[in-house]
Image (cartoon, rainbow, N blue to C red):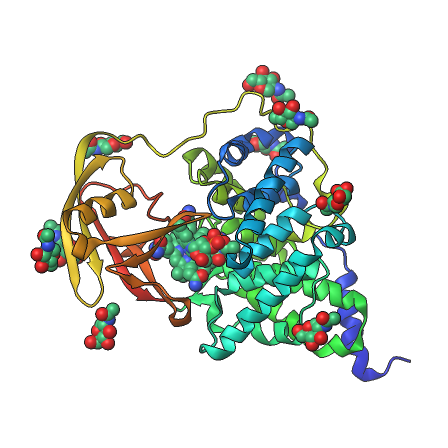
Length: 433
Ligand code: B12
Ligand SMILES: *[C@@H]1O[C@H](CO)[C@@H](O)[C@H](O)[C@H]1NC(C)=O
Ligand SMILES: *[C@@H]1O[C@H](CO)[C@@H](O)[C@H](O)[C@H]1NC(C)=O
Ligand SMILES: *[C@@H]1O[C@H](CO)[C@@H](O)[C@H](O)[C@H]1NC(C)=O
Ligand SMILES: *[C@@H]1O[C@H](CO)[C@@H](O)[C@H](O)[C@H]1NC(C)=O
Ligand SMILES: *[C@@H]1O[C@H](CO)[C@@H](O)[C@H](O)[C@H]1NC(C)=O
Ligand SMILES: *[C@@H]1O[C@H](CO)[C@@H](O)[C@H](O)[C@H]1NC(C)=O
Ligand SMILES: *[C@@H]1O[C@H](CO)[C@@H](O)[C@H](O)[C@H]1NC(C)=O
Ligand SMILES: *[C@@H]1O[C@H](CO)[C@@H](O)[C@H](O)[C@H]1NC(C)=O
Ligand SMILES: *[C@@H]1O[C@H](CO)[C@@H](O)[C@H](O)[C@H]1NC(C)=O
């Protein structure tokens, strides 16, 4: 007889034994792989010098089985150099992503032998995030996307973390899932992957002590999935085009939390495929984040050895297509209205070459009046991130940042990528998220 108070756990165990009904119909068939060539070429041709771009790229290409051994070695060296050089200056999520990339498709024990010191460092960095939350009004050093990466890497590579802290902190009502009160699909999706990993791992360990926390975590996953699905758009995207790949991964690993009728996976996939030739993924990190889902993979496949078999020849990259770079900067000058908004608005008309990006406008304005339009940017895996304007610096403890807007609407690309149009009202606005 099973004592009745243990029945929910038994239910949970049975639940997790149901094989993952991955929506296989949704992954791209081999004959259509050529549609992915622009993504792969973007990744292979990138210089990997920006932030932890190499980790994003290696993780993605390994999950896709796209690299041969010598190509993998080259990328691994790049990542190891980054991890060793800036050891202490890497954020928790950057280290977690590096561990995921280095360990992708290796057995966890083998991986752990080689990189156990990195996993130890990550344990410490994760604890520092939690400590910062306790000291600074629930604000982590970075953000919940990175805390999710931390838990995911610790879970997949035998790191130590407290399951009750995870159950407590990852409550879907926590403010860190939201920017300007709006649910962040990328963040929620990464959290679903992390929590699903924890649930699978700890359920297998059959430790009765975890029962309550596992039930709480199960509830978090269910609620996060509802929130993700509520961000589904008419055209099939979930959130925006850049969060859709991660949302797909979250939905792949949690198919028993929603009904088939609630998500048309093929519609989402087809919309993404339509956007590839438009150059929407010409940023290597954007390409890296969308590719696994299109191949039916998720970050939870990272430590299954079987998952990343080298698909020799499948991608036919012998004649690399020219990657669609940003449109050429050409001839005529165009005028835009550029403003810095703090408590007052400082604005100026700037003329730049047609095809210029937001950053060019900012530089031109700075040349005209450095007192009002001075700024600094830091290279990140998504390009230059604007950190200060007029010497006022973004701060995670205060949830402040410089928002980029066009005609009053937030942009979905950064200053280094967004191509400006004649007559546009561009704005950098001191904001709280
Ligand atoms: C957290 C987050 C933020 C936080 C960052 C501060 C913090 N406390 O962490 C806030 C809310 C401030 C933010 C701001 C912006 N973000 Co943001 N952000 C994210 C998110 C959810 C996670 C980033 C992360 O930590 N990655 C993991 C770590 C390991 O990688 P990392 O490269 O070291 O992370 C740093 C950079 O990514 C940087 N960062 C965050 N956002 C952006 C955006 C751009 C364009 C750049 C260059 C850098 C950058 O902050 C991270 C922490 O330091 C991603 C989602 C995703 N899919 O990646 C979106 C994401 C990167 N952001 C995006 C955008 C568009 C922006 C804004 C341009 C929005 C706006 N209109 O103002 C601004 C940046 C403006 C500027 N000052 O340059 C897009 C980028 C798409 C693209 N093609 O460029 C993403 C993919 C979200 C999306 N689905 O649209 N963001
Ligand atoms: C390949 O793509 C085309 C259109 O892009 C589609 O009509 C076809 O059904 C796809 N093939 C398979 C097997 O999915
Ligand atoms: C790996 O691929 C690269 C690029 O396609 C090629 O130049 C190299 O010869 C390959 N190496 C091996 C060991 O197959
Ligand atoms: C760990 O190191 C051994 C020997 O140095 C090597 O053969 C193995 O491939 C490494 N494993 C990983 C996951 O890098
Ligand atoms: C694991 O972490 C918990 C707290 O997060 C700590 O109490 C425990 O001692 C740690 N165990 C080991 C073996 O490091
Ligand atoms: C690879 O591409 C070349 C040139 O586009 C083409 O001639 C060849 O048939 C392709 N091979 C395969 C296996 O698709
Ligand atoms: C430029 O933008 C500022 C601030 O939004 C606005 O007050 C001003 O009228 C704009 N100028 C033009 C010419 O559109
Ligand atoms: C904006 O104005 C408020 C209220 O006057 C003030 O407290 C705050 O420091 C100002 N912010 C900046 C960045 O100047
Ligand atoms: C700027 O370039 C785009 C195409 O790149 C073109 O459609 C537009 O007409 C050009 N604008 C001006 C003012 O030349
Ligand atoms: C820069 O702008 C400020 C505020 O509009 C103004 O007071 C200052 O004179 C300007 N400086 C230059 C060099 O134009």
